[in-house]
Structure formats: C-alpha cells, structure tokens
Image (cartoon, rainbow, N blue to C red):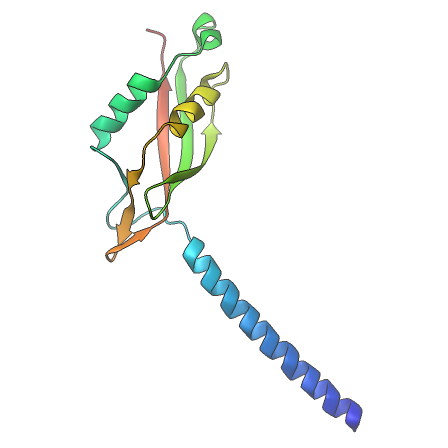
Length: 136
C-alpha cells in the first residue's frame, strides 16, 4: 500500500510542478510576443518621408553592385521594441554584391522609432522594409 500511496504523491507532485512551470512559461512568452498588426503601427520619427530621406542619405551603393549593374530590392525584417529600439534585423530576400550588407549597415544607423501601440500599451512589432538599389 505504501507504494501506491507514494506513487499518488509523486503524480500530484509532478502535476503541480508541471502546472507552475507552464504558467511561468506563459507569462514569459507574453512579454516576448511580437505583433504584426496593431492599432497604431510603429513609425519612424518624422514619418515615412523622413524614413525614405534617411535611407537615401545614408545608403551607399556597393561598388561590386555598381560594376555588375545590379538593381533590385533588399527585403529587411526587424522588430521595433516597446521602447522604440530596433532589433533582430534579417534579410528575407537579398541581392548579393554587397547590397545586403549595406542594407544592414543602414539599419544599424536607424534612431529609435515611435513604438507600435495596442489599447494604449507599447508593444513589440515586427516590421518589413524594402530597400531599393538602382544604378543612377
């Protein structure tokens, strides 16, 4: 009988442990959730026109791309944190010839953004940005 009793206690112990582990995990992931659509999307300080001017001013056409007459769009995906910082940049579609690296370099120069908001709360939001390269 002691064996069955101790097995019952072990089961309850494991269930309790599992329950508290899952609730702790759920709280952690809630803070780390990344949204794609929110009521107020994130915004570059000064708006979309300022973002385009910033990119145009900072973007340097890579020599290898210029020589090969490469043109096209580098697709960049990143996260705008709840405090406006930008993180986790990655190229989702690149061009090569140094264009991908240049897009990431410009990304690293971005100032803080106005964060996305939902129900009055700042949230982490995933953002997609195409950066166009064209021989002038």
